Amino acid sequence: MKKTVFISSTFEDLAEHRRAIWDLLEEFDVRVRGMEKFGARKESPLETSLSEVESSDIYAGVIAFRLGSIDKNSGKSITQLEYEKASELKKEILIYLIDEENSDVKIKYVDHGIKRDKLEAFKKILKEERTVAKFITKDDLIVKLKRDMERVLEHKEQKEEIIGDVYEKSAQIIERLFLAPLSFSGQEIKLQIHIESKPFASSKEICEAFNLKFGATIGVEIKILNPEGFDNFGLNELYMSPKQFDDLLPFIENKKITIYARPQFSGSKIEEIRASFKPRIVSHIMQEMVHSLGTRIVPADGKIVFLLSEIENKSTGEKRTN
Image 1 (cartoon, rainbow, N blue to C red):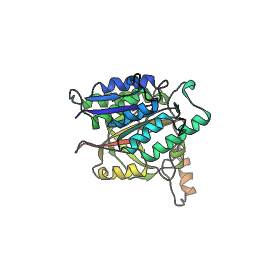
Image 2 (cartoon, rainbow, N blue to C red; image 1 turned 90 degrees about the vertical axis):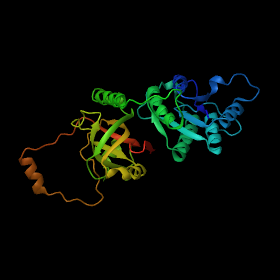
Image 3 (cartoon, rainbow, N blue to C red; image 1 turned 180 degrees about the vertical axis):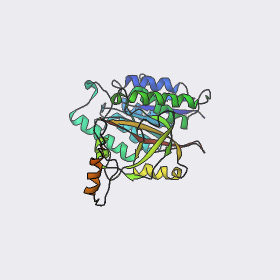
Image 4 (cartoon, rainbow, N blue to C red; image 1 turned 180 degrees about the horizontal axis):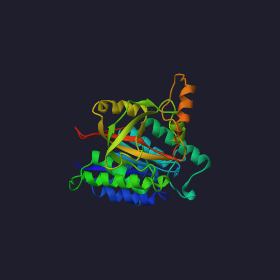
């Protein structure tokens, strides 16, 4: 039976994103609902929106830096009320939040003051209640939305995924990371990896550099198997939350795993990646021996690591999200 998708977002700032979503959904056997097709109705805009949410199967919420129209009675945004209606009716809910650290947004599309406070409160609710995906650009959003839609919808014409193309695109992003890491940081890529180390607690240096929670971030050392040719590039660290680590555990014994991850760049020089919560005694004799041998490790000018987004279980075809 054909499903219906409702697209929820502010309009002016995300007009191009919405057009791209409509274009994407043309590939699927689905009905699409959104403000572009509401037309003239006797109901209020809020009543129309909530009615469309009720008649939909999937709610896709895209949230950037604008709150949007506010309902006078509740003081909440129309977008938030649409989300609450979808939650109340237990719809399939997909949430995409803009990456506040890496996105490039015109200042006119950023709310301030009370509207910003309301927006931040709404985003906090979404993060607490849902597993959210972050996007940087319109293209980044479409890649993530397409992957999620393929889990819940059928293509109009079933198309076989060409794995080589997916890895080729990932390779292109990795190569460009070393030319302009700030511009390509945060774009999700597909990797086949080998886990090279036991899990470790992440250092305060790592957590501060990549805005991670110190004491609640776990790392493992990895080797990139696919795309090929990147095993000597120094891209050998993967970081995750404790919940993501629990999802990763069933795959650790096999050590070879396929994941989706986001490379992240920091301009900080980082000397220690592992945290220690026990006192460590460093031998002065050992330090003197190292200096006498003339050994000196110079930290790189910046650092790139991977943050886990999603685990793909190749044996079952299932995906486990964070």
